[in-house]
Image (cartoon, rainbow, N blue to C red; front, side, top):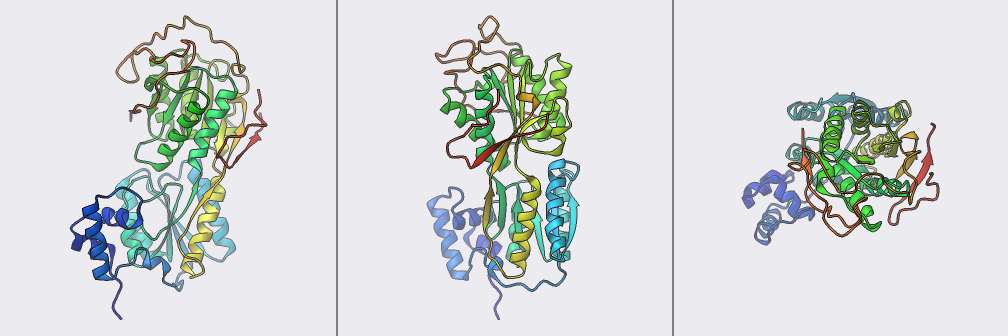
Length: 401
């Protein structure tokens, strides 16, 4: 029996990269008409079917799945791993866990090893490299992407509604009366970072607000990233009264930087994160966060992967809802409708995008109404129980103080 053609063979025949083949056939990114035509002609000639390996019935031989995470010390990924293990163990499967420690080369090595040791692989990748994963799928290995999307054909996926996460965070800060809002984004190449940033800005715009570029910085999803970005934001605009961090580790780092700068949370600056890690209940003050329920992410991803390996399901994508957990870091901020003290002149020190800038637009000088917030980010190393955000499948929960 002739083996199926691989995506690499299609790429070689069409004279393009593997990622171009994947994008052209999946329609996930724009590909020129000429390149798309060559790809489709090559695929037709070779009889290539995108994701054919994912639809081929498999017989488990090891009853084991591999899980590759970027950083096992991050509580978010630890909770994903716990969810994976809970489901796998209940079905009689084993889990092989590997942590790349934020090292792309190590991630690649572990993927190779997992491909030979497990019946299928769960990938929580932050490297942005997809060729190796595509090759695994083309070789008949079941793959499920978890947390971060991968531009590959034939993989399953379980993700959070990151666009809704950004919108919920913005709606909450606006409801609490925040006027000078800053944002710490994640790395630009990550789909989660881009979606949360987009959702946050969209909700600000819907509320008649936007954010000047010197109050929007990108940093790593780490404690150090949160500390660094907060220092830069405070240097750019000392009168910031709220910071949205696109993950909880950044938010914990931001809280440390604010404390060192003599700023109270939430009395001086409100703080909100994303992920819903257990640490949020233990920080001082406790952290308001948009929870992405990592245990459920891992459980759903493990269930899908085992079904794919067993031939009970084809590759599919699932997007899980998020929820706002309100804690102390936003509970005693500026009341909605209140005013901001200060001279309103928009004076700023160094930092941000090349030093001090004055806000544009026609809004009042004491807040962000009418400011331009649709420019590029800088890249660097009471209650709301009735809150409803249009277009978001989400709910509000109140966490312990």
